[in-house]
Image 1: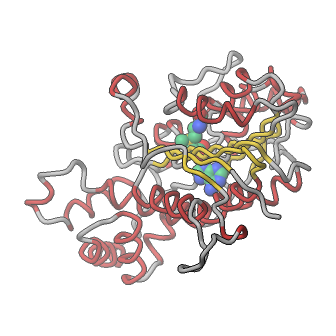
Image 2: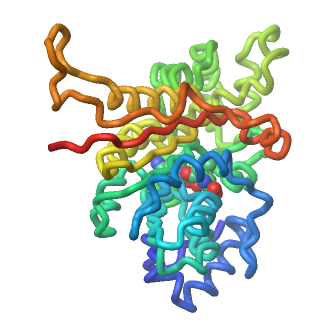
Length: 356
Ligand SMILES: C[S@@+](CC[C@H](N)C(=O)[O-])C[C@H]1O[C@@H](n2cnc3c(N)ncnc32)[C@H](O)[C@@H]1O
């Protein structure tokens, strides 16, 4: 895995992108990280539900100087399409994975004067906007979860299909790894994580076997963990529903990267920052993300006037309206092209009132 160049923890386009020292070290460093060459290949990555995302955000981005936040920049696929579609748009891209920032910085070079790319957690979205000097935004996009390179690069330890060190950090500078979680959390903590974040029916059994096995020898590889999970799941269940390690790996990934608490902070911050007519689009990939998204959006689209009043109170009127009925799914045609879009659920809303 590559090393993020000195002083480039926050990668604004004013900084490293225009710096030859950065450009050369980026291509060298990325060899061990994201696949990247001078033409900035995208490894076949297809942004999920791209046409629908563009269509939903477009009405909010027609002003003279619109601003959009891409809170999950990844390979910059959605961002590039937004910048191409809206010539006056300024895009603030956030990712906690330094390799994603590095990759997108190069990919978005043609738009360098209209982008601010920041290595941060979306949980710090309000601070990122303040520091970028753009506290108000016209659009926000959340394309949650992991990126294709994070899953495909064996060494990052996200995938049970490769044998690799148990890592799973999106931000490679943070201390907490999956190995630390698996080898130091109590049985009760592991059970809670597996049950809540993995929706694992056999959470207690899996946690119990992890505790037993780690007492013999620390669990340090994805393969050993996947074997332990398989052994903990009853044989009859093992024969159905795909790889039994899937739920445990999802749970650990969510814990290591504090994914749900980041979303709990980021989505309200983005909604609060939206101007009148501003729009948010959220792509979720599992029920926990989708539930949090639904709750955050519906809470703001309801009239909160106390019941029984003769007239609705202006201060309690909804601030947003939903743009989607329930969650939208990718089309069959998209699924045929991009099977990884299978679990995507899209929700969107528009700001229709600002606080007095
Ligand atoms: C599905 S990918 C985004 C792909 C992107 N839309 C594209 O078209 O290339 C999700 C990205 O979100 C990032 N991510 C996940 N949680 C994050 C968080 N709390 N803060 C910032 N980035 C996060 C991951 O590192 C990953 O790069």
